[in-house]
Length: 156
Image 1: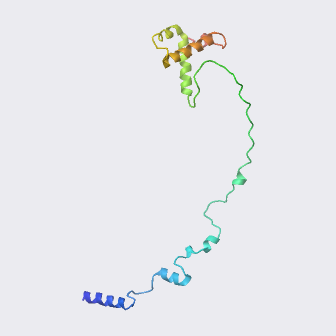
Image 2: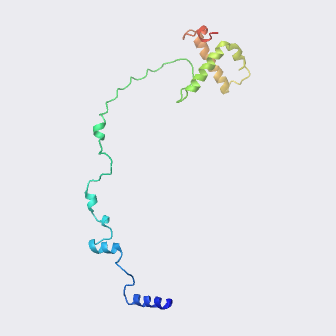
Image 3: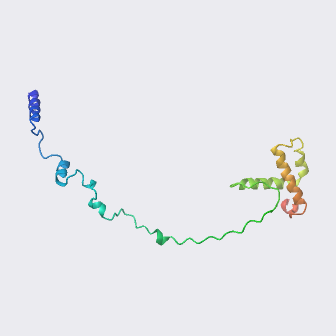
């Protein structure tokens, strides 16, 4: 019996008789009415002609921002300024500057004992260059170019 139903549907389909019940698909009705399947795919749909309101406020950038003032030029740096021999400044090196300054102040307490440690160090090593820099700074500081009072630094 089931085979006979299948055969009759097949025969009806071959004769171009519709085999479904009810109205055709909704998109076919829309296509028949307006000439296309989706109303939003028109060249200029009605929604695009309207001003969009997506919930954001209007752009008020020009009203909110002030006119940028011209910046003053800084005077050029004088050439040939010399100071204590020190360490090159690098960005975010405050921890290094503080550490080196503390090492300098600690070695000033008894520089001769500190200096004797560097006797066996080769002259071309970085450690000896560090010692040499501390020694140069000690000599300049002790020479009177800068005020250096041991009693204030090493208060015991």
